[in-house]
Length: 259
Image (cartoon, rainbow, N blue to C red; front, side, top):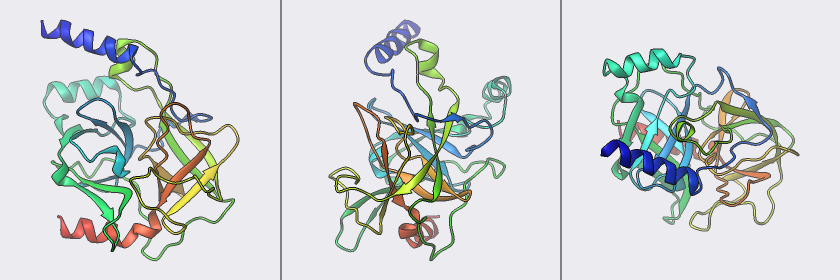
């Protein structure tokens, strides 16, 4: 009975909008972005990316959570599905899927109490130190200049079938260029942004789509941005990002005070 209900649920999800395109204009990441984290709301409706900073912390966009979420780690690791299945059978892979409630989610708020679209998530169980992480830029860093190339990533298009509703396809990587933000290039209305906290990128043929928000923006192999663009009906050709350098001290302080 439970199996039948699960099958019906998956079919409904596939038929009602789980057929979305992800990063456009990219190529398979292969062994890159092994720090990538999949973030899904427990109540269906939100799907995002995130990045593993260390054994205990994940960084993403605030709008990707703010409710109970399930984190899936190690999805893009260079490990065969048979090895992962063997670990699951032995009960060793439970840490790769964790449900995180709001008390372990930390969104940035400025001195006036305004929310920004960037969040740290503390894991319920520490990950292995062997799991790849992404490096933060040094404190006091500056955002990449206009015209500099940065790297983005996200999942490729899904097909309307049960298997692809359970297992994501290969992660896609793409390059784009830092550009000037337009008047409407900003996070959702719920969040504050300005020239210091936000940066944008654009390149013909490269877009982010539903499910790519929260994913890392790399510059010189270091985390310099978080995608905050949150398109629903169509993909975003101008990619809006939170500038990590603006939040660098807050990141350090939050992780230190919530060990």
